[in-house]
Length: 206
Image (tube, rainbow, N blue to C red; front, top):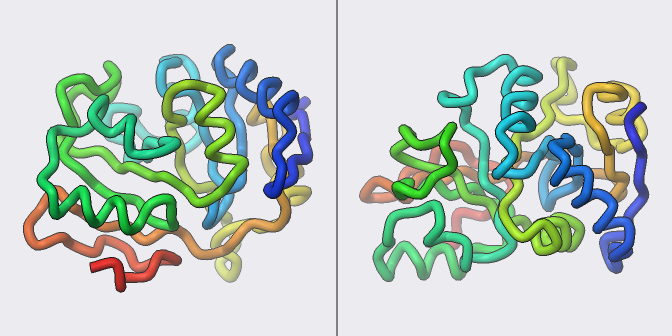
């Protein structure tokens, strides 16, 4: 049975946050709100959890395009090669926000991602997400939960999400209705930066 936990974005309850973090540390999968669409995530350090997400998404873990959801830019040096000042200024301006930035990966990437030349970094402007990552102490590996419906690309109602994902994940967080527009993806590993997908994040950050 998937647990359904209600959290209020204005004030996520620390006890509930810790309960969810304990699930993540045990290798559990969660569905959680972000500043864009709901995401499916797990602890970046738990290989079995990473493999579970890859299986659910039907991809090979080594070739997956999962994002690393961080609390702020302080985690960056753990996963990203040294970046220049202009790149850092773009990140500073845009984050936290509705962006995924593709950056050159460092040699310290977790084992399944060792061969990747780039990584996608997210710092969502959502207090529930940031509280989770802060309490976990390291990034969450994340991917959007897409819908099979041709009209609705993303499910926004947490109760409908629970219906669809019951028994597939360990926790669904109800953080209120989600958005139905994904993050803007910008590749900063190339010069000039390349817009991979235009989403919720404004392109006026340049």
